[in-house]
Length: 246
Length: 349
Ligand SMILES: Cc1ncc(C[n+]2csc(CCOP(=O)(O)OP(=O)(O)O)c2C)c(N)n1
Image (cartoon, rainbow over all chains, first blue to last red; front, side, top):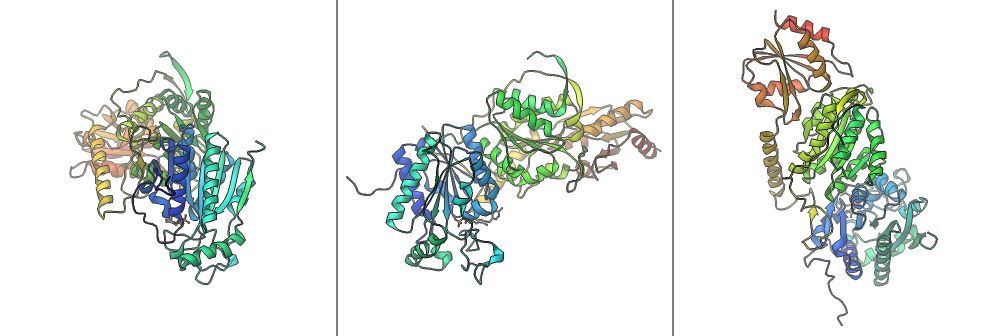
Protein backbone atom coordinates (compact mmCIF):
# COMPACT_ATOMS: atom_id res chain seq x y z
CA UNK A 1 0.00 0.00 0.00
CA UNK A 2 1.20 3.47 -0.84
CA UNK A 3 1.51 5.75 2.17
CA UNK A 4 0.81 8.86 0.24
CA UNK A 5 -0.40 9.72 -3.23
CA UNK A 6 -1.86 12.65 -5.06
CA UNK A 7 -5.65 12.62 -4.74
CA UNK A 8 -7.35 11.83 -8.04
CA UNK A 9 -9.45 14.98 -7.81
CA UNK A 10 -6.32 17.15 -7.60
CA UNK A 11 -4.87 17.93 -11.02
CA UNK A 12 -1.23 17.09 -11.53
CA UNK A 13 -0.02 20.66 -11.99
CA UNK A 14 2.07 23.19 -10.12
CA UNK A 15 0.04 25.66 -8.07
CA UNK A 16 0.53 29.41 -8.04
CA UNK A 17 0.62 29.49 -4.24
CA UNK A 18 3.64 30.98 -2.48
CA UNK A 19 5.92 28.66 -0.50
CA UNK A 20 4.50 27.99 2.93
CA UNK A 21 0.95 29.08 2.02
CA UNK A 22 -1.88 27.09 3.55
CA UNK A 23 -4.21 27.21 0.54
CA UNK A 24 -2.42 24.35 -1.21
CA UNK A 25 -2.76 22.07 1.81
CA UNK A 26 -6.45 22.88 2.12
CA UNK A 27 -6.99 22.30 -1.62
CA UNK A 28 -5.38 18.90 -1.26
CA UNK A 29 -7.43 18.01 1.81
CA UNK A 30 -10.64 18.87 -0.02
CA UNK A 31 -9.63 16.61 -2.90
CA UNK A 32 -8.70 13.75 -0.57
CA UNK A 33 -12.10 13.93 1.04
CA UNK A 34 -13.85 14.23 -2.32
CA UNK A 35 -12.04 11.07 -3.44
CA UNK A 36 -12.77 9.24 -0.24
CA UNK A 37 -16.48 10.08 -0.32
CA UNK A 38 -16.55 9.39 -4.09
CA UNK A 39 -18.33 12.66 -4.83
CA UNK A 40 -16.06 14.09 -7.54
CA UNK A 41 -18.73 13.72 -10.20
CA UNK A 42 -21.29 15.45 -7.99
CA UNK A 43 -19.07 18.33 -6.93
CA UNK A 44 -19.77 21.94 -7.87
CA UNK A 45 -17.30 24.28 -6.17
CA UNK A 46 -17.21 28.03 -6.14
CA UNK A 47 -13.80 29.67 -6.20
CA UNK A 48 -13.67 33.07 -4.52
CA UNK A 49 -11.99 36.29 -5.47
CA UNK A 50 -8.71 36.04 -3.58
CA UNK A 51 -5.82 33.62 -3.70
CA UNK A 52 -8.32 30.76 -4.07
CA UNK A 53 -9.61 32.09 -7.38
CA UNK A 54 -7.75 29.51 -9.48
CA UNK A 55 -9.47 26.58 -7.80
CA UNK A 56 -10.49 25.33 -11.24
CA UNK A 57 -6.85 24.98 -12.24
CA UNK A 58 -6.34 22.44 -9.45
CA UNK A 59 -9.65 20.79 -8.66
CA UNK A 60 -10.71 18.24 -11.20
CA UNK A 61 -14.44 18.90 -10.89
CA UNK A 62 -16.99 21.55 -11.91
CA UNK A 63 -16.10 25.03 -10.65
CA UNK A 64 -17.52 28.50 -10.92
CA UNK A 65 -15.94 31.78 -10.00
CA UNK A 66 -17.99 34.30 -8.05
CA UNK A 67 -17.77 38.04 -7.60
CA UNK A 68 -15.85 39.09 -4.48
CA UNK A 69 -17.80 37.99 -1.40
CA UNK A 70 -20.83 36.75 -3.35
CA UNK A 71 -19.62 33.17 -3.15
CA UNK A 72 -22.43 32.00 -0.80
CA UNK A 73 -25.07 33.66 -3.00
CA UNK A 74 -23.72 31.86 -6.06
CA UNK A 75 -23.61 28.65 -4.01
CA UNK A 76 -27.24 29.20 -3.04
CA UNK A 77 -28.31 29.55 -6.68
CA UNK A 78 -26.44 26.40 -7.65
CA UNK A 79 -27.62 24.29 -4.72
CA UNK A 80 -31.25 25.30 -5.13
CA UNK A 81 -31.09 24.22 -8.75
CA UNK A 82 -29.16 21.01 -8.00
CA UNK A 83 -30.10 19.89 -4.47
CA UNK A 84 -28.55 16.49 -5.20
CA UNK A 85 -25.11 17.88 -6.04
CA UNK A 86 -22.40 18.71 -3.49
CA UNK A 87 -21.76 22.43 -3.37
CA UNK A 88 -18.58 23.88 -1.89
CA UNK A 89 -18.12 27.57 -1.18
CA UNK A 90 -14.38 28.20 -0.75
CA UNK A 91 -13.64 31.63 0.69
CA UNK A 92 -10.92 33.80 2.16
CA UNK A 93 -11.41 36.11 5.11
CA UNK A 94 -11.73 39.30 3.09
CA UNK A 95 -14.21 37.58 0.81
CA UNK A 96 -16.29 36.08 3.60
CA UNK A 97 -15.97 38.41 6.56
CA UNK A 98 -15.71 41.85 4.92
CA UNK A 99 -17.24 42.37 1.49
CA UNK A 100 -19.36 39.23 1.70
CA UNK A 101 -20.62 39.56 5.27
CA UNK A 102 -24.24 39.85 4.23
CA UNK A 103 -24.04 36.88 1.86
CA UNK A 104 -22.48 34.49 4.37
CA UNK A 105 -24.77 35.49 7.24
CA UNK A 106 -27.90 35.03 5.19
CA UNK A 107 -26.82 31.84 3.48
CA UNK A 108 -26.08 30.50 6.96
CA UNK A 109 -29.33 31.83 8.34
CA UNK A 110 -31.31 30.17 5.55
CA UNK A 111 -29.58 26.98 6.47
CA UNK A 112 -28.45 26.40 2.89
CA UNK A 113 -27.34 22.81 2.58
CA UNK A 114 -23.81 23.73 1.48
CA UNK A 115 -20.28 23.38 2.80
CA UNK A 116 -18.15 26.47 3.33
CA UNK A 117 -14.39 26.20 3.67
CA UNK A 118 -13.29 29.48 5.15
CA UNK A 119 -9.57 30.15 4.92
CA UNK A 120 -8.60 32.58 7.67
CA UNK A 121 -5.08 33.87 7.06
CA UNK A 122 -5.67 37.15 8.89
CA UNK A 123 -4.75 39.14 5.78
CA UNK A 124 -5.73 40.00 2.20
CA UNK A 125 -3.36 37.72 0.35
CA UNK A 126 -4.06 38.31 -3.29
CA UNK A 127 -3.99 42.10 -3.21
CA UNK A 128 -0.68 42.17 -1.39
CA UNK A 129 -1.15 42.06 2.35
CA UNK A 130 -3.76 44.60 3.40
CA UNK A 131 -5.71 44.37 6.65
CA UNK A 132 -8.46 41.75 6.74
CA UNK A 133 -11.42 41.73 9.15
CA UNK A 134 -9.57 38.90 10.89
CA UNK A 135 -6.25 40.74 11.23
CA UNK A 136 -5.12 40.61 14.85
CA UNK A 137 -4.91 43.70 17.04
CA UNK A 138 -1.49 45.21 16.63
CA UNK A 139 -0.75 43.11 13.54
CA UNK A 140 1.03 45.00 10.79
CA UNK A 141 -0.23 44.93 7.24
CA UNK A 142 0.21 47.30 4.29
CA UNK A 143 -2.87 49.25 5.41
CA UNK A 144 -2.05 48.99 9.11
CA UNK A 145 1.60 50.00 8.91
CA UNK A 146 1.57 50.83 12.62
CA UNK A 147 -0.39 47.76 13.61
CA UNK A 148 -4.16 47.28 13.74
CA UNK A 149 -5.72 49.76 16.13
CA UNK A 150 -9.12 49.84 17.81
CA UNK A 151 -10.63 52.30 15.39
CA UNK A 152 -10.06 49.77 12.62
CA UNK A 153 -12.22 47.24 14.39
CA UNK A 154 -11.46 43.92 16.04
CA UNK A 155 -10.78 40.51 14.54
CA UNK A 156 -14.14 39.00 13.62
CA UNK A 157 -14.78 35.53 14.99
CA UNK A 158 -16.85 34.12 12.20
CA UNK A 159 -17.74 30.75 13.74
CA UNK A 160 -18.87 32.35 16.99
CA UNK A 161 -20.87 34.93 15.03
CA UNK A 162 -22.62 32.34 12.89
CA UNK A 163 -23.24 30.08 15.86
CA UNK A 164 -25.97 32.49 16.92
CA UNK A 165 -27.99 31.69 13.84
CA UNK A 166 -30.56 28.94 13.98
CA UNK A 167 -29.82 28.05 10.39
CA UNK A 168 -26.31 26.79 11.05
CA UNK A 169 -25.70 23.09 11.62
CA UNK A 170 -21.97 22.57 12.05
CA UNK A 171 -19.20 25.07 12.69
CA UNK A 172 -15.63 24.07 13.45
CA UNK A 173 -12.34 25.93 13.55
CA UNK A 174 -9.20 24.06 12.62
CA UNK A 175 -5.73 24.89 11.42
CA UNK A 176 -3.12 23.63 8.96
CA UNK A 177 -0.08 24.83 10.90
CA UNK A 178 1.04 21.34 12.01
CA UNK A 179 0.68 17.78 10.73
CA UNK A 180 -1.72 16.95 13.55
CA UNK A 181 -3.89 19.96 12.80
CA UNK A 182 -3.83 19.12 9.10
CA UNK A 183 -5.27 15.72 9.94
CA UNK A 184 -7.93 17.32 12.14
CA UNK A 185 -8.81 19.71 9.34
CA UNK A 186 -9.21 16.79 6.97
CA UNK A 187 -11.58 15.15 9.43
CA UNK A 188 -13.60 18.34 9.80
CA UNK A 189 -13.89 18.79 6.03
CA UNK A 190 -15.05 15.22 5.72
CA UNK A 191 -17.65 15.73 8.40
CA UNK A 192 -18.92 18.87 6.67
CA UNK A 193 -19.33 17.09 3.32
CA UNK A 194 -21.03 14.14 4.98
CA UNK A 195 -23.52 16.49 6.58
CA UNK A 196 -24.31 17.97 3.19
CA UNK A 197 -24.67 14.53 1.64
CA UNK A 198 -27.19 13.61 4.31
CA UNK A 199 -29.04 16.95 3.93
CA UNK A 200 -28.18 18.21 7.40
CA UNK A 201 -27.78 21.83 6.33
CA UNK A 202 -25.20 24.57 6.59
CA UNK A 203 -21.69 23.75 7.70
CA UNK A 204 -18.58 25.90 7.79
CA UNK A 205 -15.02 24.91 8.54
CA UNK A 206 -12.81 27.85 9.41
CA UNK A 207 -9.19 26.94 8.73
CA UNK A 208 -6.45 29.06 10.24
CA UNK A 209 -3.85 29.26 7.52
CA UNK A 210 -0.41 30.69 6.88
CA UNK A 211 0.51 33.56 4.59
CA UNK A 212 4.31 33.83 4.92
CA UNK A 213 4.67 36.22 1.98
CA UNK A 214 2.37 38.88 3.33
CA UNK A 215 3.14 38.26 6.98
CA UNK A 216 6.78 38.74 6.04
CA UNK A 217 7.77 35.61 7.96
CA UNK A 218 9.37 32.37 6.92
CA UNK A 219 7.37 29.15 6.79
CA UNK A 220 8.22 27.99 10.30
CA UNK A 221 7.67 31.42 11.85
CA UNK A 222 4.32 31.47 10.11
CA UNK A 223 3.24 28.13 11.56
CA UNK A 224 4.28 29.43 14.96
CA UNK A 225 2.37 32.67 14.43
CA UNK A 226 -0.79 30.64 13.87
CA UNK A 227 -0.17 28.70 17.03
CA UNK A 228 1.02 31.49 19.29
CA UNK A 229 -0.98 34.47 18.08
CA UNK A 230 -3.96 33.43 15.99
CA UNK A 231 -5.17 30.53 18.12
CA UNK A 232 -5.37 32.85 21.12
CA UNK A 233 -8.00 34.92 19.36
CA UNK A 234 -9.44 32.13 17.23
CA UNK A 235 -9.56 29.05 19.46
CA UNK A 236 -9.70 25.73 17.66
CA UNK A 237 -12.53 23.30 18.12
CA UNK A 238 -16.14 22.54 17.28
CA UNK A 239 -17.98 25.79 17.85
CA UNK A 240 -21.42 24.42 17.06
CA UNK A 241 -22.78 21.00 16.29
CA UNK A 242 -26.51 20.51 16.15
CA UNK A 243 -26.37 17.16 14.40
CA UNK A 244 -26.88 15.32 17.63
CA UNK A 245 -30.04 17.23 18.46
CA UNK A 246 -31.37 17.96 14.95
CA UNK B 1 -54.24 27.23 -21.00
CA UNK B 2 -56.79 28.45 -23.52
CA UNK B 3 -56.26 31.56 -25.54
CA UNK B 4 -58.71 33.62 -23.57
CA UNK B 5 -58.77 37.31 -22.81
CA UNK B 6 -58.21 38.21 -19.19
CA UNK B 7 -57.74 41.41 -17.20
CA UNK B 8 -54.43 41.43 -15.36
CA UNK B 9 -51.81 43.61 -13.75
CA UNK B 10 -48.51 44.17 -15.55
CA UNK B 11 -46.27 42.89 -12.78
CA UNK B 12 -48.35 39.73 -12.35
CA UNK B 13 -48.28 39.01 -16.02
CA UNK B 14 -44.47 39.04 -16.13
CA UNK B 15 -44.54 36.39 -13.42
CA UNK B 16 -47.16 34.35 -15.25
CA UNK B 17 -45.11 34.46 -18.44
CA UNK B 18 -41.94 33.46 -16.61
CA UNK B 19 -43.64 30.48 -15.01
CA UNK B 20 -45.17 29.47 -18.34
CA UNK B 21 -41.78 29.81 -20.09
CA UNK B 22 -40.25 27.38 -17.60
CA UNK B 23 -38.36 29.76 -15.33
CA UNK B 24 -36.48 27.42 -12.99
CA UNK B 25 -35.10 29.87 -10.45
CA UNK B 26 -36.15 33.26 -9.14
CA UNK B 27 -34.49 35.49 -6.55
CA UNK B 28 -35.58 39.01 -5.68
CA UNK B 29 -35.70 41.72 -3.05
CA UNK B 30 -38.76 43.92 -2.40
CA UNK B 31 -38.94 47.33 -4.05
CA UNK B 32 -41.83 49.43 -5.32
CA UNK B 33 -43.17 49.53 -8.03
CA UNK B 34 -42.39 45.88 -8.83
CA UNK B 35 -43.34 44.12 -5.57
CA UNK B 36 -46.30 42.31 -7.12
CA UNK B 37 -43.88 40.43 -9.35
CA UNK B 38 -41.72 39.18 -6.48
CA UNK B 39 -44.89 38.28 -4.57
CA UNK B 40 -46.31 36.45 -7.56
CA UNK B 41 -43.13 34.44 -7.90
CA UNK B 42 -43.08 33.71 -4.16
CA UNK B 43 -46.41 32.00 -4.57
CA UNK B 44 -46.27 30.44 -8.01
CA UNK B 45 -42.68 29.22 -8.07
CA UNK B 46 -43.40 27.36 -4.85
CA UNK B 47 -46.72 26.01 -6.14
CA UNK B 48 -44.81 24.74 -9.17
CA UNK B 49 -42.09 23.23 -6.94
CA UNK B 50 -39.42 25.51 -8.29
CA UNK B 51 -36.89 27.45 -6.18
CA UNK B 52 -37.80 30.96 -5.02
CA UNK B 53 -35.48 32.92 -2.74
CA UNK B 54 -36.14 36.28 -1.13
CA UNK B 55 -32.55 37.45 -1.00
CA UNK B 56 -30.97 39.73 1.58
CA UNK B 57 -30.23 42.32 -1.10
CA UNK B 58 -30.32 42.84 -4.84
CA UNK B 59 -26.57 42.17 -4.86
CA UNK B 60 -27.23 38.76 -3.47
CA UNK B 61 -30.26 38.11 -5.68
CA UNK B 62 -28.36 38.70 -8.90
CA UNK B 63 -25.49 36.53 -7.70
CA UNK B 64 -27.93 33.75 -6.87
CA UNK B 65 -29.15 34.11 -10.43
CA UNK B 66 -25.53 33.86 -11.55
CA UNK B 67 -25.25 30.57 -9.68
CA UNK B 68 -28.57 29.20 -10.89
CA UNK B 69 -27.75 30.11 -14.46
CA UNK B 70 -24.27 28.60 -14.16
CA UNK B 71 -26.05 25.46 -12.98
CA UNK B 72 -28.01 25.44 -16.23
CA UNK B 73 -31.35 26.79 -15.01
CA UNK B 74 -33.58 29.37 -16.62
CA UNK B 75 -33.11 32.05 -13.99
CA UNK B 76 -34.71 35.40 -13.36
CA UNK B 77 -34.60 38.36 -11.01
CA UNK B 78 -36.56 41.58 -10.93
CA UNK B 79 -36.29 44.95 -9.30
CA UNK B 80 -36.67 48.66 -9.85
CA UNK B 81 -34.03 51.31 -10.44
CA UNK B 82 -32.19 51.57 -7.08
CA UNK B 83 -32.12 47.79 -6.88
CA UNK B 84 -30.98 47.48 -10.48
CA UNK B 85 -28.04 49.76 -9.64
CA UNK B 86 -27.03 47.21 -7.00
CA UNK B 87 -27.33 44.39 -9.50
CA UNK B 88 -24.85 45.94 -11.90
CA UNK B 89 -21.90 44.09 -10.38
CA UNK B 90 -23.61 40.76 -10.92
CA UNK B 91 -24.80 41.66 -14.40
CA UNK B 92 -21.23 42.44 -15.44
CA UNK B 93 -20.10 39.00 -14.19
CA UNK B 94 -23.05 37.26 -15.86
CA UNK B 95 -22.27 38.99 -19.15
CA UNK B 96 -18.57 38.20 -18.82
CA UNK B 97 -19.26 34.54 -18.05
CA UNK B 98 -21.57 34.14 -21.07
CA UNK B 99 -24.50 33.21 -18.85
CA UNK B 100 -28.15 33.58 -19.82
CA UNK B 101 -30.70 35.15 -17.47
CA UNK B 102 -33.67 37.47 -17.42
CA UNK B 103 -33.63 40.71 -15.45
CA UNK B 104 -36.74 42.83 -15.10
CA UNK B 105 -36.41 46.54 -14.34
CA UNK B 106 -39.71 48.27 -13.65
CA UNK B 107 -38.05 51.66 -13.77
CA UNK B 108 -38.85 54.41 -11.29
CA UNK B 109 -37.64 58.00 -11.11
CA UNK B 110 -34.13 58.75 -9.95
CA UNK B 111 -31.37 59.57 -9.16
CA UNK B 112 -31.12 58.21 -5.65
CA UNK B 113 -34.42 57.17 -4.15
CA UNK B 114 -36.16 59.48 -6.62
CA UNK B 115 -39.80 58.53 -6.46
CA UNK B 116 -41.94 55.49 -7.16
CA UNK B 117 -43.59 56.69 -10.36
CA UNK B 118 -42.71 55.10 -13.68
CA UNK B 119 -39.80 56.65 -15.54
CA UNK B 120 -37.38 55.89 -18.37
CA UNK B 121 -34.30 57.31 -16.73
CA UNK B 122 -32.39 53.99 -16.63
CA UNK B 123 -32.10 53.87 -20.42
CA UNK B 124 -28.38 54.62 -20.47
CA UNK B 125 -27.69 52.19 -17.63
CA UNK B 126 -29.56 49.42 -19.43
CA UNK B 127 -28.46 49.93 -23.01
CA UNK B 128 -24.83 50.77 -22.32
CA UNK B 129 -24.38 47.89 -19.90
CA UNK B 130 -24.43 49.63 -16.52
CA UNK B 131 -21.65 47.69 -14.82
CA UNK B 132 -17.92 47.66 -15.49
CA UNK B 133 -16.29 46.29 -18.60
CA UNK B 134 -17.04 46.03 -22.31
CA UNK B 135 -20.37 44.24 -22.49
CA UNK B 136 -23.95 44.49 -23.64
CA UNK B 137 -27.33 43.17 -22.62
CA UNK B 138 -30.32 42.61 -24.82
CA UNK B 139 -32.82 45.22 -23.65
CA UNK B 140 -36.49 44.99 -24.54
CA UNK B 141 -38.98 47.82 -23.99
CA UNK B 142 -42.58 46.56 -24.05
CA UNK B 143 -45.46 49.05 -23.99
CA UNK B 144 -48.49 47.04 -22.85
CA UNK B 145 -49.48 44.28 -20.49
CA UNK B 146 -49.78 41.95 -23.48
CA UNK B 147 -46.23 42.76 -24.51
CA UNK B 148 -44.94 42.27 -20.98
CA UNK B 149 -46.31 38.73 -21.25
CA UNK B 150 -45.02 38.06 -24.75
CA UNK B 151 -41.58 39.58 -24.35
CA UNK B 152 -40.95 38.00 -20.97
CA UNK B 153 -41.37 34.62 -22.65
CA UNK B 154 -39.23 35.67 -25.57
CA UNK B 155 -36.51 37.00 -23.28
CA UNK B 156 -35.86 33.51 -21.87
CA UNK B 157 -35.37 32.19 -25.40
CA UNK B 158 -33.10 35.05 -26.42
CA UNK B 159 -31.04 34.62 -23.25
CA UNK B 160 -30.54 30.92 -23.94
CA UNK B 161 -29.96 31.39 -27.64
CA UNK B 162 -27.16 33.92 -27.21
CA UNK B 163 -26.03 33.12 -23.63
CA UNK B 164 -26.59 36.70 -22.60
CA UNK B 165 -28.52 38.56 -19.90
CA UNK B 166 -31.77 39.98 -21.24
CA UNK B 167 -33.40 42.93 -19.55
CA UNK B 168 -37.08 43.77 -19.71
CA UNK B 169 -37.04 47.56 -19.37
CA UNK B 170 -40.55 48.41 -18.23
CA UNK B 171 -41.61 51.17 -15.91
CA UNK B 172 -43.74 51.64 -12.82
CA UNK B 173 -46.80 52.56 -14.86
CA UNK B 174 -46.65 49.37 -16.93
CA UNK B 175 -46.10 47.29 -13.84
CA UNK B 176 -49.07 48.73 -11.98
CA UNK B 177 -51.41 48.94 -14.96
CA UNK B 178 -54.36 46.56 -15.34
CA UNK B 179 -55.12 45.72 -18.94
CA UNK B 180 -56.69 42.91 -20.90
CA UNK B 181 -54.43 40.46 -22.65
CA UNK B 182 -54.52 37.07 -24.28
CA UNK B 183 -52.68 34.40 -22.35
CA UNK B 184 -51.14 31.80 -24.59
CA UNK B 185 -49.05 28.72 -24.16
CA UNK B 186 -45.30 28.88 -24.35
CA UNK B 187 -43.70 26.97 -27.15
CA UNK B 188 -39.98 26.40 -26.69
CA UNK B 189 -38.01 26.96 -29.89
CA UNK B 190 -36.56 23.67 -31.11
CA UNK B 191 -33.14 24.96 -32.05
CA UNK B 192 -32.01 26.36 -28.70
CA UNK B 193 -28.44 25.24 -27.99
CA UNK B 194 -27.90 22.55 -25.35
CA UNK B 195 -26.31 23.85 -22.15
CA UNK B 196 -23.26 21.60 -22.34
CA UNK B 197 -21.28 24.26 -20.47
CA UNK B 198 -23.48 24.15 -17.36
CA UNK B 199 -22.24 23.03 -13.95
CA UNK B 200 -24.09 19.81 -13.23
CA UNK B 201 -21.32 17.68 -11.75
CA UNK B 202 -18.75 16.24 -14.16
CA UNK B 203 -20.21 12.74 -14.43
CA UNK B 204 -19.36 11.37 -17.86
CA UNK B 205 -17.52 14.46 -19.08
CA UNK B 206 -14.59 16.74 -18.34
CA UNK B 207 -15.18 19.34 -15.63
CA UNK B 208 -16.85 22.58 -16.68
CA UNK B 209 -15.63 25.97 -15.52
CA UNK B 210 -17.58 29.22 -15.37
CA UNK B 211 -15.30 32.23 -15.06
CA UNK B 212 -14.67 35.83 -15.95
CA UNK B 213 -10.99 36.11 -15.01
CA UNK B 214 -8.52 36.09 -17.92
CA UNK B 215 -5.08 36.98 -16.57
CA UNK B 216 -2.72 35.11 -18.84
CA UNK B 217 -1.53 35.16 -21.52
CA UNK B 218 -1.42 38.90 -21.89
CA UNK B 219 -4.03 39.02 -24.65
CA UNK B 220 -6.41 36.43 -23.14
CA UNK B 221 -8.90 39.03 -22.00
CA UNK B 222 -8.78 40.90 -25.28
CA UNK B 223 -9.57 37.65 -27.06
CA UNK B 224 -12.46 37.05 -24.70
CA UNK B 225 -13.74 40.59 -25.26
CA UNK B 226 -13.52 40.14 -29.01
CA UNK B 227 -15.43 36.86 -28.80
CA UNK B 228 -18.13 38.59 -26.80
CA UNK B 229 -18.20 41.25 -29.46
CA UNK B 230 -18.73 38.71 -32.23
CA UNK B 231 -21.84 37.68 -30.34
CA UNK B 232 -22.96 41.28 -29.92
CA UNK B 233 -22.51 41.95 -33.64
CA UNK B 234 -24.52 38.82 -34.45
CA UNK B 235 -27.33 39.97 -32.18
CA UNK B 236 -27.26 43.40 -33.81
CA UNK B 237 -27.84 41.73 -37.17
CA UNK B 238 -30.49 39.31 -36.02
CA UNK B 239 -32.51 41.27 -33.51
CA UNK B 240 -33.93 44.62 -34.52
CA UNK B 241 -37.39 44.86 -33.02
CA UNK B 242 -39.61 47.85 -33.64
CA UNK B 243 -43.11 48.94 -34.56
CA UNK B 244 -44.02 51.65 -37.01
CA UNK B 245 -47.32 53.48 -37.51
CA UNK B 246 -48.06 55.88 -40.38
CA UNK B 247 -44.40 56.42 -41.15
CA UNK B 248 -44.86 56.40 -44.92
CA UNK B 249 -44.91 59.95 -46.22
CA UNK B 250 -45.13 61.26 -42.69
CA UNK B 251 -44.25 64.93 -42.30
CA UNK B 252 -42.81 64.13 -38.92
CA UNK B 253 -41.95 60.88 -37.16
CA UNK B 254 -42.10 60.64 -33.40
CA UNK B 255 -39.69 58.18 -31.79
CA UNK B 256 -40.89 56.82 -28.45
CA UNK B 257 -40.77 53.53 -26.56
CA UNK B 258 -42.66 51.96 -23.68
CA UNK B 259 -45.33 53.91 -21.86
CA UNK B 260 -44.67 57.11 -23.80
CA UNK B 261 -45.41 55.44 -27.12
CA UNK B 262 -49.01 54.96 -25.96
CA UNK B 263 -49.42 58.70 -25.49
CA UNK B 264 -47.88 59.25 -28.89
CA UNK B 265 -50.39 56.86 -30.50
CA UNK B 266 -53.20 59.06 -29.21
CA UNK B 267 -51.43 62.12 -30.55
CA UNK B 268 -51.12 60.58 -34.00
CA UNK B 269 -54.80 59.69 -34.06
CA UNK B 270 -55.94 63.13 -32.98
CA UNK B 271 -53.50 65.17 -35.07
CA UNK B 272 -54.58 66.79 -38.35
CA UNK B 273 -51.00 66.45 -39.61
CA UNK B 274 -49.41 63.35 -41.08
CA UNK B 275 -47.47 62.14 -38.05
CA UNK B 276 -45.78 58.76 -37.80
CA UNK B 277 -44.53 56.70 -34.87
CA UNK B 278 -41.32 54.76 -34.75
CA UNK B 279 -41.28 52.62 -31.63
CA UNK B 280 -38.07 50.76 -30.82
CA UNK B 281 -38.85 47.52 -28.97
CA UNK B 282 -35.31 46.22 -28.80
CA UNK B 283 -33.54 49.13 -27.12
CA UNK B 284 -30.28 47.26 -27.41
CA UNK B 285 -29.68 46.50 -30.15
CA UNK B 286 -31.33 49.74 -31.20
CA UNK B 287 -33.17 49.30 -34.52
CA UNK B 288 -30.91 51.83 -36.18
CA UNK B 289 -31.20 50.69 -39.78
CA UNK B 290 -34.99 50.73 -39.79
CA UNK B 291 -34.97 54.22 -38.34
CA UNK B 292 -32.34 55.41 -40.76
CA UNK B 293 -34.24 54.01 -43.71
CA UNK B 294 -37.27 56.18 -43.01
CA UNK B 295 -37.53 58.88 -45.62
CA UNK B 296 -38.70 61.48 -43.12
CA UNK B 297 -36.60 64.60 -42.48
CA UNK B 298 -38.08 65.59 -39.14
CA UNK B 299 -37.95 63.52 -36.00
CA UNK B 300 -39.25 64.20 -32.55
CA UNK B 301 -38.07 62.07 -29.66
CA UNK B 302 -40.40 61.90 -26.67
CA UNK B 303 -39.03 60.24 -23.57
CA UNK B 304 -39.52 60.13 -19.83
CA UNK B 305 -35.87 60.97 -19.16
CA UNK B 306 -33.64 63.95 -19.80
CA UNK B 307 -32.52 63.04 -23.29
CA UNK B 308 -31.15 59.52 -23.21
CA UNK B 309 -32.74 57.59 -26.08
CA UNK B 310 -32.38 60.69 -28.24
CA UNK B 311 -28.65 59.90 -28.42
CA UNK B 312 -29.37 56.58 -30.13
CA UNK B 313 -31.77 58.30 -32.50
CA UNK B 314 -29.11 60.85 -33.42
CA UNK B 315 -26.50 58.13 -33.84
CA UNK B 316 -28.85 56.20 -36.11
CA UNK B 317 -29.49 59.27 -38.25
CA UNK B 318 -25.86 60.44 -38.21
CA UNK B 319 -24.80 61.87 -41.57
CA UNK B 320 -28.35 62.34 -42.86
CA UNK B 321 -29.94 65.78 -43.10
CA UNK B 322 -32.78 64.87 -40.74
CA UNK B 323 -33.43 67.10 -37.74
CA UNK B 324 -34.07 65.68 -34.29
CA UNK B 325 -36.10 67.48 -31.61
CA UNK B 326 -36.79 66.35 -28.09
CA UNK B 327 -39.49 66.40 -25.45
CA UNK B 328 -37.93 65.16 -22.22
CA UNK B 329 -39.92 64.72 -19.03
CA UNK B 330 -37.90 63.38 -16.10
CA UNK B 331 -38.94 62.53 -12.55
CA UNK B 332 -41.79 60.18 -13.39
CA UNK B 333 -43.87 62.71 -15.34
CA UNK B 334 -45.66 61.48 -18.45
CA UNK B 335 -45.53 63.87 -21.41
CA UNK B 336 -49.04 65.10 -22.18
CA UNK B 337 -50.76 64.93 -25.56
CA UNK B 338 -51.12 68.72 -25.48
CA UNK B 339 -47.42 69.39 -25.12
CA UNK B 340 -46.65 66.97 -27.92
CA UNK B 341 -49.27 68.61 -30.19
CA UNK B 342 -47.80 71.99 -29.38
CA UNK B 343 -44.29 70.86 -30.24
CA UNK B 344 -45.50 69.33 -33.52
CA UNK B 345 -47.10 72.62 -34.49
CA UNK B 346 -43.85 74.45 -33.83
CA UNK B 347 -41.83 71.91 -35.77
CA UNK B 348 -44.11 71.92 -38.80
CA UNK B 349 -44.56 75.67 -38.98
C1 LIG C 1 -15.40 44.28 -5.68
C2 LIG C 1 -13.98 43.99 -5.50
N1 LIG C 1 -13.27 44.67 -4.60
C3 LIG C 1 -11.96 44.42 -4.43
C4 LIG C 1 -11.33 43.47 -5.16
C5 LIG C 1 -9.85 43.24 -5.00
N2 LIG C 1 -9.51 42.04 -4.25
C6 LIG C 1 -9.14 40.91 -4.88
S1 LIG C 1 -8.74 39.69 -3.83
C7 LIG C 1 -9.06 40.66 -2.49
C8 LIG C 1 -8.82 40.20 -1.10
C9 LIG C 1 -8.87 38.76 -0.91
O1 LIG C 1 -8.50 38.48 0.37
P1 LIG C 1 -9.04 37.21 1.12
O2 LIG C 1 -10.50 37.06 0.87
O3 LIG C 1 -8.62 37.33 2.54
O4 LIG C 1 -8.36 35.99 0.39
P2 LIG C 1 -6.82 35.60 0.27
O5 LIG C 1 -6.32 36.22 -0.98
O6 LIG C 1 -6.11 36.09 1.49
O7 LIG C 1 -6.84 34.12 0.21
C10 LIG C 1 -9.47 41.92 -2.89
C11 LIG C 1 -9.81 43.00 -1.96
C12 LIG C 1 -12.10 42.77 -6.13
N3 LIG C 1 -11.58 41.83 -6.92
N4 LIG C 1 -13.41 43.04 -6.26
